[in-house]
Length: 192
Image 1 (tube, helix red, strand yellow):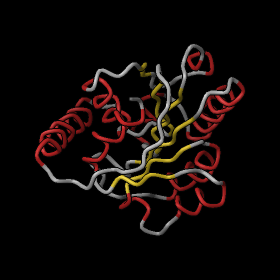
Image 2: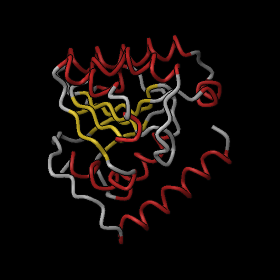
Image 3: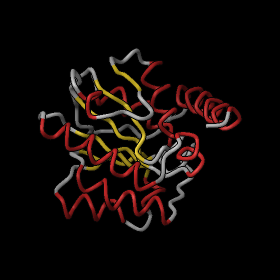
Image 4: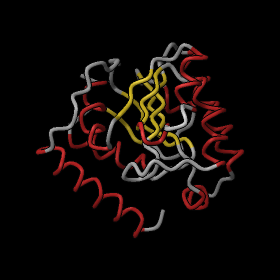
């Protein structure tokens, strides 16, 4: 990722964390909990993964971040957290094509499931929670989301019910984030 993109994400997150400290955002009443340590990686090389990483660092959670995690990285972890979304810039920076990324993520999920490790899929709909999904992201979500054990989705990124439909069809619990500020509550709550 370019430095400017990372800088904008970090600035947005700092603003979100600052606002989150004062905002009366709706409390998240039902969040599934998981064991640590956990592995954070992007599915689609979305820059949103950096927001999740920063929240985990800020809360001093027991995790490891790997932008291009492999099945071997799942070893010694209790949970796999996939931050889903396609970024062509992110894929280009990583030097991989989308089909290679989908294969990599499917291999991660397979390794986790074969070891009894739960997989969380998080969709924050673009840095700052803008609510955007494009055709490439929908293709990735259609492939990956049905294979996770728990979904956390920003509501504005699921206005059409696409991810809710995947959750219902596959019996996957789903928690909505009403705003991106909710990420600062949900991520720590999942790993208490």
